[in-house]
Length: 421
Ligand code: AMP
Image (cartoon, rainbow, N blue to C red):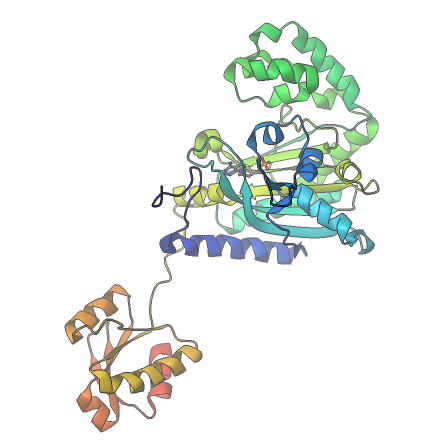
């Protein structure tokens, strides 16, 4: 127990953290270029927020939340996603008084009691954006283009963007009815969960991952054939803008989000080689959510991208950056007398921006050189008694093996010049 982390969690080890910093930096830069600003909300919220904001009939709320009572007997939940929390913060801090749309992004851990496997964890990380306050299809297109731009900047290829519309509260009841009628004769072939979904939320049957259910819905009626005029125009407008931006997409009539506050656009980006966990990005419009959370009706759209899956995809395509371990100067003071002079110079060079390392274990010169090689040091600065008396430092170029005596007094400048050359 003490030497194993909880099931479904992962440590990002020093060898991997550079990948995460890289991916996060690309996410931040992409958001900067699209004028989205970062929001950081707490990792736990009142449970009630997720019951409302995600929906009581969803798998997340029914089966996957980490909910606990704190010492003051409040029910709190580790956030399983972040849209509800962003909306809560938007309302709490009256961000609606800013010019609309309010464009926000976040990066951070989410928690779901999922069945762990490759690409699926109980603590995982999402990069997500939310654009609140604009109704037309242009913002939908921007949100999708941002997701694509992020993934393409990382160099990822072979991604499939799938889009659909789920209509709105005006046209969905009619579609729901058509779907119910279609499913009525097939109930015995559906999985247990889908029989319940049929009663409570039949759209979610379309989304079921069980093969027995996918077989039954091949000829199911499509939402696009039951849209009201506004929704049809919205969807057509989105497609026109995606085409204008040069984004390739596929129509996916069975891509749905089952709850009433999800409206119009739904989309997903998949990387098929990730198999069962191929969804890298999921997003959609939620024009009813802000009202559901207690605000005045305000439209919104967003996405969330799973960063573990992005890193798995980068690994598969050999796109992870090389490790940045390399040290500019490794200091090898020989003997206690040399240490303060070496430490002084090391401190100054670090302050000037060089990556410096030294021996902390009192190794022999041979041991220090070996250690310097392991640190991929470009130079080793050797400071022994002779050098100290002469006011010099012996600088060894680790690539060529060449050694030169450099004036210790001017060491800082000459080392800087040497390493930067
Ligand atoms: P969702 O919030 O369910 O729409 O998920 C958005 C994205 O988050 C998915 O496309 C995945 O990339 C990622 N994701 C969701 N659940 C998990 C999980 N349990 N482990 C890792 N990534 C996840």
